[in-house]
Amino acid sequence: MPRTREEIIGAFPSAPAGGINMEAGMVKKALFVRLEAKPGKEQEVESFLMGGLPLVEQEPATIAWFGLKIAPSVYGIFDAFPDDAGRQAHLAGKVAEALMAKAADLFASPPEIMNLDVLAAKLPS
Image (cartoon, rainbow, N blue to C red; front, side):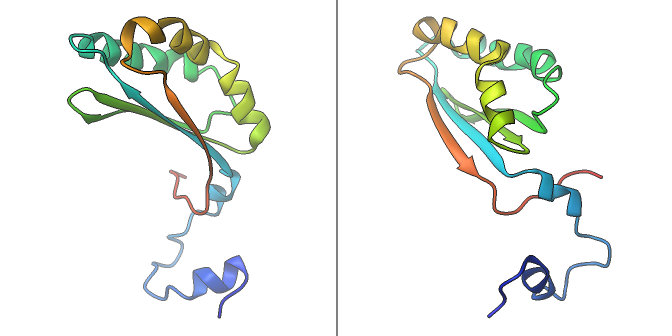
């Protein structure tokens, strides 16, 4: 049974040569935030998520950030970090602050924030 990262990667012989991004090893921690819009607030939630991108671009430890539409009134945010310090910096940042400030107005329930450990990732080179 494979035990090391190299043995695990080697267990996939169909992977193209050079097709494995070793930089993905920088991503160790992530967040998933589930958001349910109040009826009639869907467009405001979408605008909020799109407006968050420029703020997140100023966070050097936020390696990846996605604003997602899961269903007509269900949204999400997925972001990835090199370590827990980066994740905590993001949670203390401007987007999180704005999210909590608008939560009562925009969302049917409080944002559900899940801390995740990243097991594998593929990122652009």
